[in-house]
Amino acid sequence: MAREYLHLHNSIYKNTSLLSDAEFGRLIRSVLIYLITDHRPEPAGNERFVLPFLIHEIDRED
Image (cartoon, rainbow, N blue to C red; front, side, top):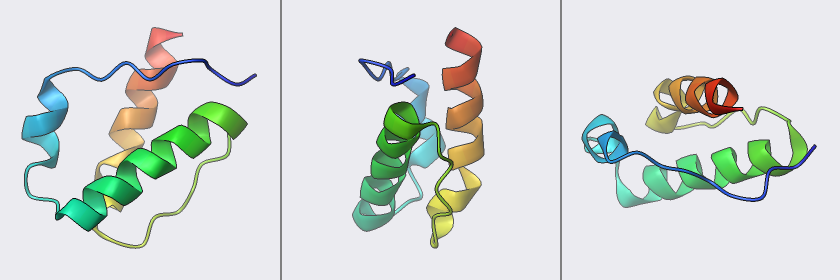
């Protein structure tokens, strides 16, 4: 079931500060894809290190 919103904690800034703008954009896009489809995208850049933690947080809040 698709979720209607994305809740981001302020800590995301600290946890993603080393990502480039492009990597951060791909990360957010991957999270949105996961929220809508429940499919876990396989990002190619450094965002792949952060995505599992964000998905875990999303799943924990449900």
